[in-house]
Amino acid sequence: MKKICFLLSILLFNISCNYKVDDSSETNKKTSDSLQQTPKAPFGIVIHGGAGYIKKGNLSDSLENAYREKLKEAITTGNEILKNGGSSIEAVKRSINVMEDSPLFNSGKGAVLTHEEKPELDASIMDGKTLNAGGIAGVSTVKNPINLAYEVMEHSDHVLLAREGAEAFAKTRNLEIVEPSYFITDKQLQNIKRIKNENANKEAAFYNSDINGEKFGTVGCVALDKNGNLAAGTSTGGTANKKWGRIGDSPIIGAGTYANNKTCAVSGTGWGEYYIRGVVAYDISALMEYKGLSLEKATKEVIQKKQPELGGNGGIIAIDHLGNISMEFNTPGMFRASFVNDSLTIGMYRE
Image (cartoon, rainbow, N blue to C red):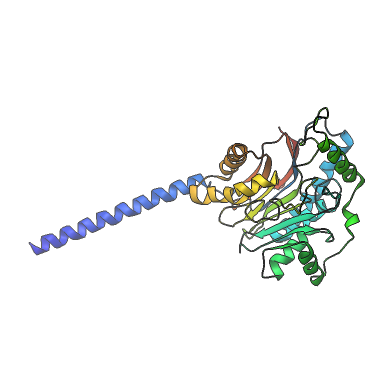
Protein backbone atom coordinates (compact mmCIF):
# COMPACT_ATOMS: atom_id res chain seq x y z
CA MET A 1 0.00 0.00 0.00
CA LYS A 2 2.85 2.38 0.87
CA LYS A 3 4.50 1.61 -2.48
CA ILE A 4 1.26 2.44 -4.34
CA CYS A 5 0.91 5.77 -2.49
CA PHE A 6 4.52 6.60 -3.21
CA LEU A 7 4.08 5.88 -6.94
CA LEU A 8 0.89 7.97 -7.06
CA SER A 9 2.72 10.87 -5.39
CA ILE A 10 5.48 10.74 -8.01
CA LEU A 11 2.88 10.64 -10.80
CA LEU A 12 1.00 13.67 -9.46
CA PHE A 13 4.27 15.60 -9.01
CA ASN A 14 5.25 14.95 -12.65
CA ILE A 15 1.83 16.06 -13.89
CA SER A 16 2.11 19.25 -11.83
CA CYS A 17 5.59 20.00 -13.19
CA ASN A 18 4.49 19.39 -16.80
CA TYR A 19 1.53 21.71 -16.32
CA LYS A 20 3.78 24.50 -15.05
CA VAL A 21 6.21 24.09 -17.93
CA ASP A 22 3.38 24.26 -20.47
CA ASP A 23 1.97 27.39 -18.82
CA SER A 24 5.39 29.05 -18.89
CA SER A 25 5.85 28.11 -22.54
CA GLU A 26 2.53 29.66 -23.46
CA THR A 27 3.41 32.89 -21.63
CA ASN A 28 6.77 33.05 -23.36
CA LYS A 29 5.09 32.44 -26.72
CA LYS A 30 2.71 35.34 -26.17
CA THR A 31 5.55 37.65 -25.19
CA SER A 32 7.62 36.45 -28.12
CA ASP A 33 4.80 37.02 -30.58
CA SER A 34 3.91 40.47 -29.26
CA LEU A 35 7.50 41.72 -29.24
CA GLN A 36 8.16 40.36 -32.75
CA GLN A 37 11.21 38.30 -31.81
CA THR A 38 12.62 38.33 -35.35
CA PRO A 39 15.54 40.69 -35.94
CA LYS A 40 14.66 43.30 -38.57
CA ALA A 41 18.09 44.90 -38.87
CA PRO A 42 21.59 44.47 -37.35
CA PHE A 43 21.73 48.23 -36.79
CA GLY A 44 19.71 51.32 -37.62
CA ILE A 45 19.15 55.01 -36.97
CA VAL A 46 16.21 57.42 -36.99
CA ILE A 47 16.15 61.22 -36.62
CA HIS A 48 13.55 63.95 -36.30
CA GLY A 49 13.75 67.69 -36.82
CA GLY A 50 10.53 68.74 -35.13
CA ALA A 51 6.80 68.13 -35.48
CA GLY A 52 4.06 70.69 -36.01
CA TYR A 53 2.13 72.60 -38.64
CA ILE A 54 4.23 71.27 -41.52
CA LYS A 55 2.14 71.03 -44.69
CA LYS A 56 2.91 70.78 -48.37
CA GLY A 57 2.76 74.31 -49.72
CA ASN A 58 3.88 75.96 -46.49
CA LEU A 59 7.50 75.48 -47.54
CA SER A 60 9.04 76.80 -50.72
CA ASP A 61 10.73 74.27 -52.99
CA SER A 62 14.16 75.63 -52.07
CA LEU A 63 13.46 75.45 -48.32
CA GLU A 64 12.04 71.94 -48.63
CA ASN A 65 15.18 70.86 -50.47
CA ALA A 66 17.33 72.49 -47.80
CA TYR A 67 15.56 70.47 -45.09
CA ARG A 68 15.93 67.27 -47.09
CA GLU A 69 19.64 67.80 -47.61
CA LYS A 70 20.30 68.59 -43.95
CA LEU A 71 18.24 65.61 -42.74
CA LYS A 72 20.20 63.42 -45.18
CA GLU A 73 23.51 64.82 -43.93
CA ALA A 74 22.59 64.30 -40.29
CA ILE A 75 21.38 60.72 -40.61
CA THR A 76 24.18 59.70 -42.98
CA THR A 77 26.69 60.95 -40.42
CA GLY A 78 25.23 58.66 -37.78
CA ASN A 79 24.72 55.73 -40.13
CA GLU A 80 28.37 55.74 -41.18
CA ILE A 81 29.40 55.51 -37.53
CA LEU A 82 27.13 52.51 -36.99
CA LYS A 83 28.13 50.88 -40.27
CA ASN A 84 31.78 51.02 -39.22
CA GLY A 85 31.05 49.40 -35.86
CA GLY A 86 30.74 52.58 -33.80
CA SER A 87 28.49 52.98 -30.80
CA SER A 88 24.86 54.08 -30.82
CA ILE A 89 25.73 56.85 -28.35
CA GLU A 90 28.33 58.31 -30.72
CA ALA A 91 25.96 58.06 -33.68
CA VAL A 92 23.20 59.85 -31.78
CA LYS A 93 25.50 62.63 -30.61
CA ARG A 94 27.08 63.30 -34.00
CA SER A 95 23.80 63.23 -35.91
CA ILE A 96 22.31 65.75 -33.51
CA ASN A 97 25.44 67.94 -33.82
CA VAL A 98 24.70 68.36 -37.53
CA MET A 99 21.20 69.62 -36.80
CA GLU A 100 22.34 71.79 -33.87
CA ASP A 101 24.78 73.54 -36.20
CA SER A 102 22.06 74.28 -38.77
CA PRO A 103 19.79 77.36 -38.56
CA LEU A 104 16.96 75.27 -40.03
CA PHE A 105 16.03 73.62 -36.73
CA ASN A 106 14.92 74.62 -33.26
CA SER A 107 18.14 73.53 -31.54
CA GLY A 108 21.54 75.12 -31.22
CA LYS A 109 22.00 77.81 -33.87
CA GLY A 110 18.51 78.80 -35.03
CA ALA A 111 16.72 77.90 -31.79
CA VAL A 112 13.58 79.81 -30.86
CA LEU A 113 13.92 82.68 -28.39
CA THR A 114 12.43 83.46 -24.99
CA HIS A 115 10.12 86.36 -24.17
CA GLU A 116 13.29 88.34 -23.37
CA GLU A 117 14.54 87.46 -26.88
CA LYS A 118 17.34 85.22 -25.60
CA PRO A 119 18.29 81.58 -26.32
CA GLU A 120 17.78 78.98 -23.57
CA LEU A 121 18.78 75.51 -24.73
CA ASP A 122 17.89 72.06 -23.37
CA ALA A 123 19.17 68.57 -24.24
CA SER A 124 19.44 65.01 -22.97
CA ILE A 125 20.99 61.68 -23.92
CA MET A 126 20.58 58.12 -22.63
CA ASP A 127 22.50 54.85 -22.95
CA GLY A 128 20.20 51.84 -23.29
CA LYS A 129 22.88 49.38 -22.14
CA THR A 130 23.62 50.95 -18.76
CA LEU A 131 20.52 53.18 -18.33
CA ASN A 132 22.97 55.99 -17.62
CA ALA A 133 21.69 59.40 -18.73
CA GLY A 134 22.50 63.09 -18.79
CA GLY A 135 20.51 66.25 -19.33
CA ILE A 136 21.02 70.02 -19.33
CA ALA A 137 18.53 72.90 -19.26
CA GLY A 138 18.52 76.63 -19.86
CA VAL A 139 22.05 77.06 -21.20
CA SER A 140 23.00 79.95 -23.49
CA THR A 141 26.73 79.63 -24.13
CA VAL A 142 27.43 75.96 -25.01
CA LYS A 143 27.70 75.54 -28.80
CA ASN A 144 26.41 71.96 -28.85
CA PRO A 145 24.02 71.24 -25.96
CA ILE A 146 23.87 67.48 -26.68
CA ASN A 147 27.64 67.28 -26.07
CA LEU A 148 27.16 68.82 -22.64
CA ALA A 149 24.37 66.35 -21.86
CA TYR A 150 26.79 63.57 -22.81
CA GLU A 151 29.46 64.97 -20.47
CA VAL A 152 26.93 65.10 -17.63
CA MET A 153 26.14 61.45 -18.28
CA GLU A 154 29.74 60.28 -18.53
CA HIS A 155 31.66 62.58 -16.20
CA SER A 156 29.38 63.67 -13.36
CA ASP A 157 27.46 62.09 -10.51
CA HIS A 158 24.27 63.75 -11.71
CA VAL A 159 21.60 63.37 -14.37
CA LEU A 160 20.33 66.93 -14.88
CA LEU A 161 22.20 70.25 -14.62
CA ALA A 162 20.76 73.71 -15.34
CA ARG A 163 21.75 77.22 -16.32
CA GLU A 164 24.90 78.73 -14.76
CA GLY A 165 25.84 75.48 -13.07
CA ALA A 166 25.59 73.53 -16.31
CA GLU A 167 27.66 76.17 -18.12
CA ALA A 168 30.31 76.12 -15.40
CA PHE A 169 30.52 72.33 -15.73
CA ALA A 170 30.86 72.70 -19.52
CA LYS A 171 34.02 74.75 -19.03
CA THR A 172 35.56 72.03 -16.85
CA ARG A 173 34.97 69.59 -19.71
CA ASN A 174 36.58 71.92 -22.28
CA LEU A 175 33.48 72.15 -24.46
CA GLU A 176 33.21 74.87 -27.08
CA ILE A 177 31.79 78.05 -25.53
CA VAL A 178 30.14 80.80 -27.60
CA GLU A 179 28.39 84.09 -26.99
CA PRO A 180 24.57 83.85 -26.72
CA SER A 181 24.36 85.92 -29.90
CA TYR A 182 25.77 82.94 -31.85
CA PHE A 183 22.41 81.17 -31.53
CA ILE A 184 20.23 84.11 -32.58
CA THR A 185 19.20 84.21 -36.24
CA ASP A 186 17.29 86.99 -37.99
CA LYS A 187 14.48 84.52 -38.67
CA GLN A 188 13.93 83.70 -35.00
CA LEU A 189 14.37 87.30 -33.91
CA GLN A 190 11.62 88.35 -36.30
CA ASN A 191 9.56 85.36 -35.22
CA ILE A 192 9.63 86.24 -31.51
CA LYS A 193 8.75 89.87 -32.18
CA ARG A 194 5.79 88.78 -34.30
CA ILE A 195 4.61 86.26 -31.70
CA LYS A 196 4.78 88.80 -28.90
CA ASN A 197 2.84 91.29 -30.99
CA GLU A 198 0.17 88.74 -31.91
CA ASN A 199 -0.04 87.45 -28.35
CA ALA A 200 -0.79 91.00 -27.28
CA ASN A 201 -3.75 90.98 -29.65
CA LYS A 202 -5.09 87.45 -30.05
CA GLU A 203 -8.04 88.84 -31.94
CA ALA A 204 -5.71 89.49 -34.85
CA ALA A 205 -6.89 87.87 -38.06
CA PHE A 206 -5.73 84.29 -38.62
CA TYR A 207 -3.98 84.10 -35.26
CA ASN A 208 -2.80 80.51 -34.70
CA SER A 209 -0.12 79.70 -32.14
CA ASP A 210 0.75 76.40 -33.83
CA ILE A 211 1.34 78.00 -37.23
CA ASN A 212 3.40 80.73 -35.63
CA GLY A 213 5.77 78.18 -34.20
CA GLU A 214 5.27 78.77 -30.50
CA LYS A 215 5.02 75.13 -29.43
CA PHE A 216 6.79 72.80 -31.81
CA GLY A 217 10.41 72.22 -32.71
CA THR A 218 13.28 70.14 -31.38
CA VAL A 219 15.69 67.63 -32.96
CA GLY A 220 16.35 64.09 -31.87
CA CYS A 221 17.99 60.81 -32.77
CA VAL A 222 17.67 57.15 -31.78
CA ALA A 223 20.03 54.36 -32.80
CA LEU A 224 20.79 50.64 -32.51
CA ASP A 225 24.41 49.61 -33.01
CA LYS A 226 25.94 46.29 -34.12
CA ASN A 227 26.51 45.27 -30.51
CA GLY A 228 22.78 45.46 -29.83
CA ASN A 229 22.99 48.65 -27.78
CA LEU A 230 20.35 51.37 -28.01
CA ALA A 231 20.71 55.11 -27.42
CA ALA A 232 18.50 58.19 -27.63
CA GLY A 233 19.14 61.92 -27.61
CA THR A 234 17.10 65.12 -27.91
CA SER A 235 18.08 68.80 -28.26
CA THR A 236 15.89 71.91 -28.38
CA GLY A 237 15.46 75.62 -27.91
CA GLY A 238 12.12 74.90 -26.27
CA THR A 239 9.00 76.92 -27.05
CA ALA A 240 9.13 80.40 -28.50
CA ASN A 241 8.21 83.21 -26.12
CA LYS A 242 8.75 81.05 -23.02
CA LYS A 243 9.03 82.85 -19.68
CA TRP A 244 10.25 82.36 -16.11
CA GLY A 245 12.88 79.74 -16.95
CA ARG A 246 10.38 77.31 -18.47
CA ILE A 247 11.79 73.83 -19.13
CA GLY A 248 10.04 71.29 -21.34
CA ASP A 249 10.29 67.55 -21.82
CA SER A 250 13.46 67.39 -23.94
CA PRO A 251 16.02 67.38 -21.07
CA ILE A 252 13.88 65.15 -18.86
CA ILE A 253 14.67 61.44 -18.99
CA GLY A 254 11.49 59.43 -19.47
CA ALA A 255 9.53 62.36 -20.89
CA GLY A 256 11.36 63.46 -24.04
CA THR A 257 14.16 60.88 -24.10
CA TYR A 258 14.49 57.25 -23.05
CA ALA A 259 16.55 54.18 -24.02
CA ASN A 260 16.59 50.64 -22.66
CA ASN A 261 18.19 47.65 -24.38
CA LYS A 262 15.28 45.48 -23.20
CA THR A 263 12.81 47.45 -25.30
CA CYS A 264 13.52 50.55 -27.34
CA ALA A 265 15.01 54.04 -27.68
CA VAL A 266 12.68 57.05 -28.00
CA SER A 267 13.04 60.78 -28.72
CA GLY A 268 10.04 63.09 -28.67
CA THR A 269 9.04 66.40 -30.21
CA GLY A 270 5.88 68.23 -29.28
CA TRP A 271 4.07 70.08 -26.54
CA GLY A 272 6.49 69.49 -23.67
CA GLU A 273 4.11 70.06 -20.77
CA TYR A 274 1.96 67.15 -21.94
CA TYR A 275 4.95 64.95 -22.72
CA ILE A 276 6.14 65.46 -19.15
CA ARG A 277 2.73 64.68 -17.69
CA GLY A 278 2.38 61.60 -19.88
CA VAL A 279 5.99 60.43 -19.35
CA VAL A 280 5.79 59.72 -23.07
CA ALA A 281 9.18 58.17 -23.86
CA TYR A 282 9.16 55.83 -20.86
CA ASP A 283 5.49 54.98 -21.36
CA ILE A 284 6.27 53.53 -24.79
CA SER A 285 9.04 51.39 -23.31
CA ALA A 286 6.83 50.30 -20.42
CA LEU A 287 4.01 49.22 -22.75
CA MET A 288 6.52 46.99 -24.52
CA GLU A 289 8.14 45.59 -21.37
CA TYR A 290 5.06 45.05 -19.20
CA LYS A 291 2.22 44.57 -21.70
CA GLY A 292 4.27 42.89 -24.43
CA LEU A 293 3.20 45.35 -27.13
CA SER A 294 5.23 45.72 -30.31
CA LEU A 295 7.00 49.02 -30.94
CA GLU A 296 4.41 49.97 -33.54
CA LYS A 297 1.46 49.31 -31.24
CA ALA A 298 3.09 51.02 -28.26
CA THR A 299 3.91 54.21 -30.16
CA LYS A 300 0.44 54.41 -31.71
CA GLU A 301 -1.18 53.89 -28.30
CA VAL A 302 0.75 56.78 -26.78
CA ILE A 303 0.84 59.28 -29.66
CA GLN A 304 -2.51 58.65 -31.34
CA LYS A 305 -4.59 57.90 -28.24
CA LYS A 306 -3.12 58.79 -24.85
CA GLN A 307 -1.54 62.14 -25.75
CA PRO A 308 -4.55 63.55 -27.65
CA GLU A 309 -6.84 62.49 -24.79
CA LEU A 310 -4.60 64.42 -22.41
CA GLY A 311 -4.48 67.41 -24.76
CA GLY A 312 -0.99 67.10 -26.21
CA ASN A 313 0.22 67.12 -29.79
CA GLY A 314 3.50 66.14 -31.37
CA GLY A 315 5.43 63.07 -32.42
CA ILE A 316 8.19 60.60 -31.60
CA ILE A 317 10.85 58.55 -33.30
CA ALA A 318 11.80 55.14 -31.91
CA ILE A 319 13.82 52.02 -32.66
CA ASP A 320 13.59 48.75 -30.76
CA HIS A 321 16.21 46.18 -29.81
CA LEU A 322 15.46 44.19 -32.97
CA GLY A 323 15.75 47.02 -35.49
CA ASN A 324 12.05 47.82 -35.89
CA ILE A 325 11.43 51.56 -36.22
CA SER A 326 8.55 53.96 -35.66
CA MET A 327 8.04 57.59 -36.69
CA GLU A 328 4.65 58.40 -35.19
CA PHE A 329 3.05 61.86 -35.03
CA ASN A 330 -0.42 63.38 -34.62
CA THR A 331 0.41 66.77 -36.17
CA PRO A 332 0.18 67.72 -39.88
CA GLY A 333 3.86 66.91 -40.33
CA MET A 334 7.21 65.99 -38.80
CA PHE A 335 10.70 66.38 -40.26
CA ARG A 336 12.12 62.85 -40.10
CA ALA A 337 14.49 60.34 -41.65
CA SER A 338 15.55 56.74 -41.14
CA PHE A 339 18.45 54.59 -42.32
CA VAL A 340 17.83 50.86 -41.88
CA ASN A 341 19.18 47.92 -43.93
CA ASP A 342 20.95 50.36 -46.28
CA SER A 343 17.61 52.00 -47.05
CA LEU A 344 17.31 55.77 -46.53
CA THR A 345 13.90 57.39 -46.15
CA ILE A 346 13.17 61.09 -45.62
CA GLY A 347 9.77 62.55 -44.79
CA MET A 348 8.17 65.83 -43.84
CA TYR A 349 4.44 65.67 -44.37
CA ARG A 350 1.72 63.23 -43.37
CA GLU A 351 1.72 60.57 -46.06
